[in-house]
Length: 289
Image 1: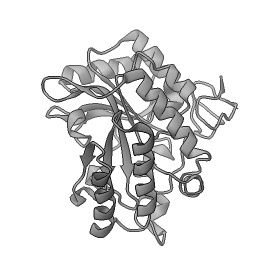
Image 2: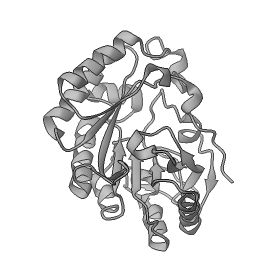
Image 3: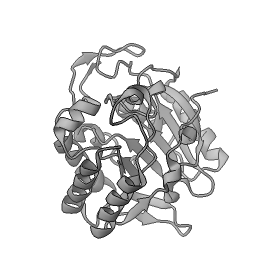
Image 4: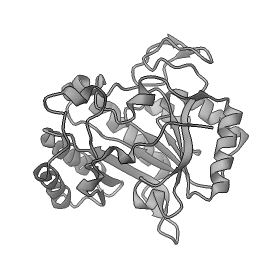
């Protein structure tokens, strides 16, 4: 295929197992982990876990990526859509609350095919960077129940510097509008688990509280009452960030309180983490059987 799935619109040639685009991946999904995961928001993980499928490769290059082992190296196992569907069945049989697809933008056509083979009787969560093409999201309309995007930056220059993602703000805003159009406002079952809706994640970066505050204000201005906001303080230096002057540490209590105060002042509904989340313990082991 000649690929234009992500906002970069590389026009790159991708075969089933090789790719010359920014993501460097073929069209068949490369998967690093299929397993229940308990580290998501309470209405996603619940008591039985979220059935996560972690895809390798990425359409961004965040220098602090906490999943850099799979996003940059391509570590994982290549699966057909049929094998991917079998993974959904396995997770469903384990009793998880939902099926959670993590960083699947560059494999979206194979994901659609996998749901044609088997659509679990569970909510489908699409967990992504937010740097996603609305045209690609349209392929998922009617298949995804819950969108779980990041909104990393309110500053395009910062997005280019830290993630090599040009025109980030407009792209993420347009993507979020499409997500809300598809699934609507948050809805829950009788156990308090999310059935439909959008949760937007904002990861606070050390020495970048102004960016986080600007993101929260952007979300308030454009999407108030339509989304939940998950304010995350779990940042730990990974990848290239380990040696960076600003990003080579966890955030401080003062930084976290400053951003959290803005979240409360804006009256944005959602979730916050405890600072104890800033540990590598939450990063999964990248093994798949």
